[in-house]
View (cartoon, protein in one colour):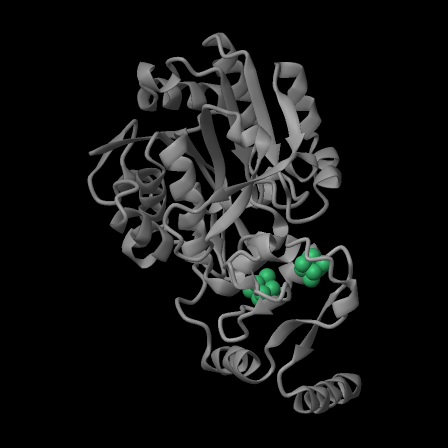
Length: 378
Ligand code: SF4
Ligand code: SF4
């Protein structure tokens, strides 16, 4: 049974709420021999915390103060925002956290280290920031939000921000729910873990995670089992964790406990509220459109300029699904059937040897012309 602490933030005393959660949810063992801690907030863009989009920095500040008091000397706050990370950090005042004794790291400027995906549900391998890999304990300090693709964005979904943007794009194309589990399974198997969910201002609506209606809940959740913390958060949003595919997947693979929750500090029933969620399934029209795009107009990379190819294999190692091989003749082979069309290999080729073609290019061209004519007539 996994312990989840849930508490109200009284009179804006965020530090008091975090301290309470810490005392209730963190066992002595969790911090034993921990030298370096990485805190990963959700700073998707520069919207302030009261919009329901980004993690409240008072939570991060409180965590730093508490961890310093407990004798942790190396604390890093790391993130790669959806927008320009440096601009987001400056707009939100993230560097101010350094005066409390933490280092702020823009993952985009960190060294990316390639790791094998333990489960290989969507990605065979992916990259993580060196700063994260050097840490003993990861704290996913997430926001309580709805998400148009995954239903919710909580402490598991927050981890997608630990991989490069190009791989996030690939994950969204292949299967975002499985990509979340690929990243999470690596971290939970190799690191100690703590999840915090910021429900001071949560976000509801169909357009999450970047837009929607902020909801003042004045809640914070914490626990060392991220699956349990996310399951409790979904229950507070009045839905079954079974409906959220990545939470159900994590539970099925034994990465955490979705059902047996021991909730302390408050009751789910006492704080739950029905959130307006994105529709469970895409509309028939959007489904048809994405099927047609995939079926008829898929982008497929190919070696356009053979003379430029140096055989460096950068494209081979960049392909997240291991879809490129070097043949006996030294030429690269791309498996068209399995290719997701993510274009990561084209970005990886510094020689500009690769290009792409669109399946049924003429039909695609006609479709685009019709689209632009219709748009100009609106
Ligand atoms: S990255 Fe470019 S140059 Fe290197 S092997 Fe691939 S196609 Fe050739
Ligand atoms: S071959 Fe290129 S476009 Fe296809 S999946 Fe691999 S990286 Fe993506």
